[in-house]
Structures are given as C-alpha cells and as structure tokens.
Length: 482
View 1 (cartoon, one colour):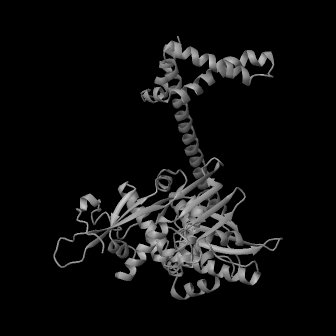
View 2 (view 1 turned 90 degrees about the horizontal axis):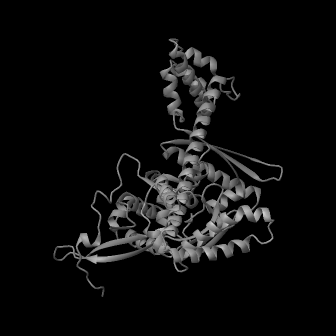
View 3 (view 1 turned 30 degrees about the vertical axis):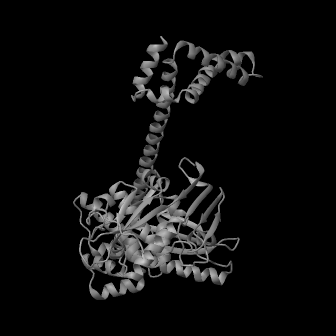
C-alpha cells in the first residue's frame, strides 16, 4: 500500500490553474533548439520493441537510446513533452508540477484512468531517453560539436484532497534536464513551435514534418531534400524501391495538406523529380499565408469585381497557386499606382491572367520588390550575427583582462615565480624559430603563458576581480603596469 503524503500545494510548487492552462485563441509558443527539430527525438509509431537508432551524417552520428522495456516516445508523448516545456519556459523554472487532468484537458486527450496511465508511461519513456550528437550538433558559425542530453526526471505524489471519503490527489512534479532546458532557452538557433498547431494536426507524420520544416526553412523559404535522407530524419521506414518511395512521397504530400489547413502563418507547396542518379529530390517551398485556398481566391476575385460565372471560368482554367501569384502581383501594382493617385480594377487583373495551362511570371517590379525585401532581411541577419560575434569577442576579452588583472594583483614574489615559469615555457615553444622571430615573439609568449598559469593556478583570485566594462578593466591594467 502506498504511503499517503500530506503536503501543501505550495510545498509541491503546484502552479496556479491559470499557469497550467494553455491560452485560448492565441499561439502557445514553445522555444526549441533547431538540432532537436532536425533530428528526431520521438518516433511516428508506438513500437515497444524499438529502443534505439542512429542517423549517420556527413559530419558525424546522431544516436538515440530509450528504455528497452517501454520503447521510444511517440507522437502523443511528444505533445506531453511540449506541454511540459511550455510550462517550464512560461515559469522560467526547470521544475514544474501539474496533474494528470491538466495534461489531458490541455492536450485534448480523453479524461480517465486509461489516459492517466498513458501520461505516466510517457514520463517513464522520456526519463529513460539519452541523446548523443557525435560531431553533428550545430552551434553556429559552421561550428559542429559533440554533445549529449537526457530529457527529464519526475515524481508522482499522492496529496490529501482536503475532503473525507475522496481519493488522494496525484501531483506530478517534473524536472527537465538542465542541459536540455538551457539549450532550448539560450540557443541562438531556435524556432518557436506553436503547441496549438501540433495539437490540431493530430497526424504523427504531419507533426514531425512541421517540426522538421521549421528547422529546414530557418533562413530560406525553400528547401531541397533527397527523399531517403528526409525519410530517415522523419523516422519513415522505406525500402529503396521506386514504387515504395512514391507511396511515401504521397504520404508527405498528404501531411503537408494537413499542415496547410492548420498552420496560421504559412502555406507549403510540394513537388519532386528524379536526378541523374535516379534519386528522388523533393522541393518544398513556403509562403506567408495570405490568400491560398479556393475560398480565399474566390473572395478576392469577388472583391475586385468578378461575377459568379467568370469566377467559375477562371478557377477552371487556372490552378489556385497561379491565381494566388497573380493576385499578389496585382495587389502590389495596385498599391504602387495608388501612391500616384492612379486606380486599377478587375479589368486590369483580368489582363494579367496567363493563357490557360501556362505558368504565371511575376512582373519585374514585383520581383525587384521581393528581392529588395530579401536583401534587407539578409543584411539585417548579417548585422545581427556581426553584433553577436562582437559581443562574444568582448566577453572573451573581458575574461582575459580579468585574468591579467588577477596576475598583476598577486604578491610580487608569486608574480616573479609565474614569470620565470612562463619564460621557460615560451622559450621551449620558440625552439627552432629564427632569432628574429624569437626577439619579436618572446615577450608576447611570456605574457600569454603568465595568463595561462594564472588562470589555472589562481582561479580564486580571478573570480574575485569585480565585474566591470572592458574599458574600465583595460584602464586598471594600464594604471598598474605604468
């Protein structure tokens, strides 16, 4: 028989109901590092016999291990993890407490003992997961590193419900792994995933594809993927036969249709071809959601003066994608002309439609406008990256200055001892160099070695150096050295 634990909500850190509830009618965003979007941390099908897999890349190997007794987390387990991450990021705490009921109501699961057991099993699955990136974890600036992660640990406690003849209330307390949590919260390379979209997608493949495309379209709006490589990242099992690959591609297309119906921000288009090596190459492109459905196009055509029968004829002769592009171009031209007091109507739009069966080519003005927007975004990204690098370089320089200042504040006898050791190390490093090189490099190398020795042997002294700006630290160094 389980022991009854009488603890207050405060002691259990149970969040207020409002904090445990997803917002209605607006996005519920969960920040996630792009590495956990590119590489799968859950599987499409619940298969308890599968507990590990690996994906080989050009840079290294991604390895995944789960609890052998219960297998890899599945699509619903994935939703529960995102709910937990949502709570931790909302409260800025790695540890959060909630109830089975909270999980089921917020994620639109059924309510009852069966679902509660599934939530419990989900937590056991995630607590048994180990993820290892062997030379394939992207850190920016083309830097690829190795890194390992666990996901979470949990406790389930029975709490006095405060009323007689009522069963004990079960409170779940989850602590997300520190490295896993910090990587999502502090990463410079992340995407905000809307938990609402994942819930509404329902289909596991659509959920996984949505995640993956958020990473692949991190900076660009178009991606090309070799089919078998994509299937591996999505955890789709596929033999390398054309007929089977084509069936899987049909599944991808259906998943994209589901995403298009549920994603409030973007609409995706999809096509594929075979290259000279007979590989299937997928092209997936996204556009900001404007008008994209048949209903949206009809409403736009009505707005610009098209009647019922002409609309039927236009819809019959042209694909929705072509009509969307024509309407984009038309609305851009209309806005530009209105700046000069000119007005254009549906007749102008009619004249822009291509012949039936032909593709639409954007006007040069629209193309240049879009190009300017992309160039501006690219410049802004480059400037942001430059500022980030400058900030990181300043941090490194501040650390170096603190080490130098710590050395200069050491007792004279200790400084002399460090300098003598540094001089010997510097001379050893410069063996074989020309006399000219020794003459010019010796002083610099000695100073570098002094700082290295101080950093390693006098960490406490370095830690005592007060925080200050780079300029202030450099000024203090100059004053002592003079």
